[in-house]
Image 1 (cartoon, rainbow, N blue to C red):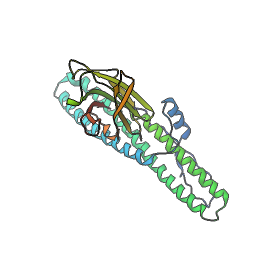
Image 2: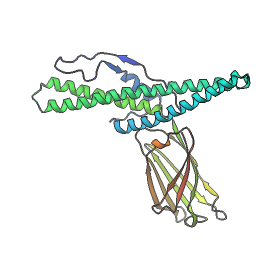
Image 3: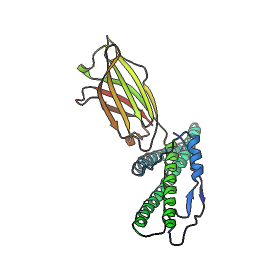
Image 4: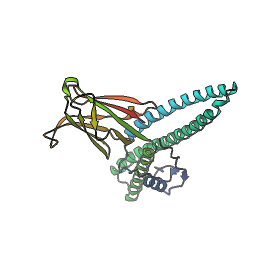
Length: 287
């Protein structure tokens, strides 16, 4: 999992008319640096902030990290006790555990700080929209409306840049395709195609059921690395290959929320590929 550090905060004041409240507040993050870091990590910056889904994802991630942090702390306490009892063979293991714990704490703190900043700007954006709508319904001077529009634009750009940096810190999902099963529905010699879409990421694999043993399957690809995203859904489509690989018959398409994928332990996911559930896909998910 990535351990990018939090972008430092900078303070700069914005000169506004006395009659207009300071929409953006006094403390802001360095927008230019956020954009540059997004380019370095090859993370695309969205044009529109996805506030609700972003906060929901961050809540899931931070919950998992905090739980893992507690487990690591408990393990360190046990190792300290063992070393204190003159079991010096565990000293190296204790040191490694302490280093990993400190990295985890720093990464969690960075995510939490960015989340707090994101929440502040989301609140400012809501206030700027309310003010803009109110000014449009009154005879306010054009300069005042333009100033509010400027604040609205800067809030939007900052939220989008923060989302890009957060995505760079979410790590990667590794999906391992175990098998396709279906009892009487899966026959020896059948061939299937699986398409996986996650945001702009797309993977495709084809598999064939062995003629002499339906439990033995050959796939062109079984491991899929998906860069974790804040607001995208995972889509899995299963096709049955017909007519010597020329024609495809769609069996089913499933769409998933990935927030449950954030877990320290590996998870086994069983998907009903068709509506009746007679064909199932089995994946092993690591984060």
